[in-house]
Image (tube, rainbow, N blue to C red):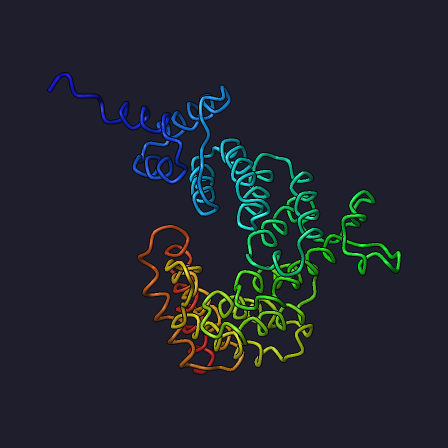
Length: 343
């Protein structure tokens, strides 16, 4: 009928009238068009700025709505809704972590860092360790301003650190702070897989390869079916197999890499039922490890396994397919040259 409202107009009308965060989230996620979502966010913000209503909900409602804002490149909207959420759910770690991410997205890393440190000092260790988001998003923010985690922290932040970190008056680097923060969460809640992965990444960025492996293995001790941690271990051994920093010979390192990468293909337990690692990425790294083993140990079976994986991947789009096709050409050339040398 001509008098029926346009579905999009009706959704916008409903979204700008509701006072329920959960209802607003449901309305937004029912729309695929990003421009329409952004219009809704703008109109909702305008209404709230005019004091024409208040959104109410629990921490999960505000978290879900903020996440949709991030996905729609509307971090300012997410930040303002998170401020409302924190007024209604004071110091909830999920919302604090989300706010750190929002500030980082908006180009305000130092505000995000200050907020994270104040929250850490105020709530540690029990409440701070409840959720992984604060620690992980804090680490991501620090990495944005100091990728090597090697800069000394500005003096204005020292007063926000736990007293034990500043008693000796030595210089404190960002890496020291992030490692302490992630370790705090890992110690009190060892089932947070992301904590172990991110802590290992910090050690790796600082050149501490032995500690990187130790952290990942500690994480696997409490999360034995984690695909993410096994894949990370396989990558560390594969990337460092020619170095003595990990305390292994090149051949032993490659064997370790193959073991963990093979396990990563079969182990995939995580809470949200979505893969933490692309299966194609695992397969490609495993093929590289087989290829390295074939060369190091003159292992024909390993070479056949590498070829088999590359054959499966060569039809994939993007870099997986092109890289695999290229490796197959190199392997054929290698086999032909080896045969001529034998003759």
